[in-house]
Length: 401
Image 1: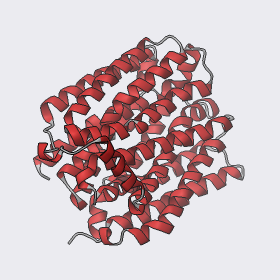
Image 2 (image 1 turned 90 degrees about the vertical axis):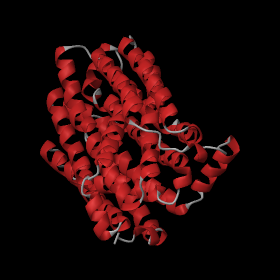
Image 3 (image 1 turned 90 degrees about the horizontal axis):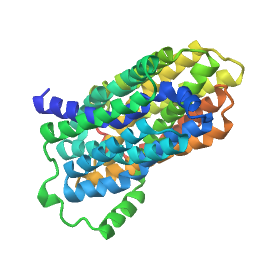
Image 4 (image 1 turned 120 degrees about the vertical axis):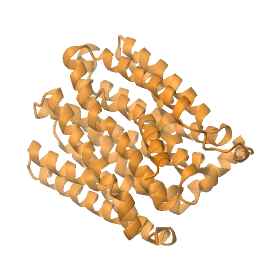
């Protein structure tokens, strides 16, 4: 492995993890936040949903901006806004203020979500891009593996406000990394000609690209299943199954490790079998296990060990799907990688927020609303893969020589 590939993976992975860290670290504190701010479950979940909406919608802005002005200036602006919003969350004294400031922080964190994918496409394509993406996810894994544990530790010794002081400091660290360790990957000569009209035309072109949209939606519904677990598992595991916040952080970290760990096999598997076959196999495994999990609980099973084991397995398969669909979707759009990455990310995040919003009214303290969301997303991803992917991407899926 070249030193530059490792450095890019390290820097881009850490920067990409800032936004998710701001989500995962405060998951164990959601029940405490509700109690502290006299808010019900739906209101507290809304602070999570608006963060996802901001992460999704604002990618439509950051992508074209990074194509027009380069990758680094929008990263600087986004991280600065994230720091300001997170400091505001640390000072919030009511749930409405927290929700508004979480949205502002999400607008800023969005830059760290969309632009690193474009940087990967600037630097590499094909199997090499898959290797870099998988390495990036390995570094990125510090968030879902360590953040819930860190959040649990923080609320065991201090108030939940300190979680936001810590993520603010991480935003400052991200600014330092971008300034000192990341070179500009978008040449000046490639930036000209990005106007509002051309951006809208580009989005319309991408929306009409069946191959791009099929891959994007497969990844979007895969990620939405993870979001359904993320948004509902704190209340389910802590309130329904009686686990402690620290135990919840451990269980969440294990499932996240399955997702990230499986992604590390992507480069090798894609080189041997082709990117499309890896996606097909990953979706088949993910959907089969997710639907089995739903069926077991629908017929009366209500056991934490069964839930944990099958979620672990299904999210492991999901780790083969999400990074590979992103690489395939961007493969033929190098000249508009920022804009294409923005639409891809927006679709994923907005779909995830919609799924969480659909589940929220049905939350009753039992596992079924969450498992229905996960199963529904898995079924849709499976159908999309079955009907569109095999027909759309044979040419781009050939194994590397």
